[in-house]
Image (tube, rainbow over all chains, first blue to last red):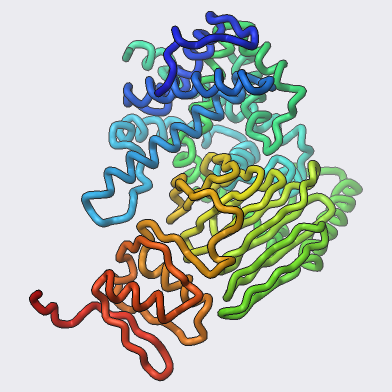
Length: 178
Length: 324
């Protein structure tokens, strides 16, 4: 049973208003990844309660870093569970496809991102593909492309910022939808 | 607007740092301070992190990758002859080429291949002091380099007891699944070309699939990757993997996978030619090192026909379904 915000006690000196801020930030992240409100609620509350539990037993290096990691893992769990249940009546293996409600929005977003990627210097695009798609480490990318690790970092940072900029309606549109 | 794009770059830099295998502990408070500093910081970070993790980005990158301009072969160490796109001074290029040569040759020289036959198991100690216990019909290729430790499970199943080293990560690849070790003991079971199961007995590991986000498994956790799809698995806490005592715990496992396990112990090939039978879900605890007993159990519980031929054992659907 996930704790609600009111139940959260703060033994390590994180004031309650900070937990609210952390919760709101995680909420924004989770909302951007799924449009199922029940999942959003679930994941955020569970993340917060795990963060509080963790902060009781050990000093957290970074509340935000751990929070985002937990939320990301919980989302994966949710996604798997959903696709497993969905696949149960039919005997076919669990589908890898994203949740149906994301498909339509997804297609437009893919088009926008593709355009932004095409507008990038090829080297930057290459770095992003290797990092995100092939899961190569920064060191490996630097070695493969003959770049310095700093340069690889710069390409990822710039590239990600470019992609973010390409999605202007992104933040505002979702705010309206609430 | 320029302020916003600066925030975006800062947020992107944090995302990149957070996604490194080892998040620098000293950077933790800095990150929290940055997040606490302004609401816009938190918003942009949340949006960017969501974008970075999103399926749409993976898809867009996948399509961008396959367009001719950006077409780049996924890096295979041996086939790497690509030159940096930027023209560098000649001297630097020469130095680079030399370094590249070293980087290329070293891995080839230092790859060691370990194999076991059906029914045989073997325990090897690696150059770094780690231990690998291999089940029957298993092949593991190990590469211990000064800057990294890599192992590939080509087939079969192996238990890794990895010596902890802060600077050199230990990675196990099994198909598209990678297990990144954070100093620990764990089991990797390559059940088929596109199916891998991982269970952790001590410490923690990170499991990733191709480009997918990593998931951290701790002691007592398990995970299964089927066709690039990762599911966490509840696992009974035991001190050593089942296969070491010749057992296999199946919960909704395709018959083909179970037979693959039995095959690791059996010199005689076991054939399941019927496709529907291959995927028949099986549950139970099987003594896989005892071929006859497993086949008997499957025969009686799942109503299949087991035919013992002179050269092979064939599992078939029951021909005539008699009334009971």
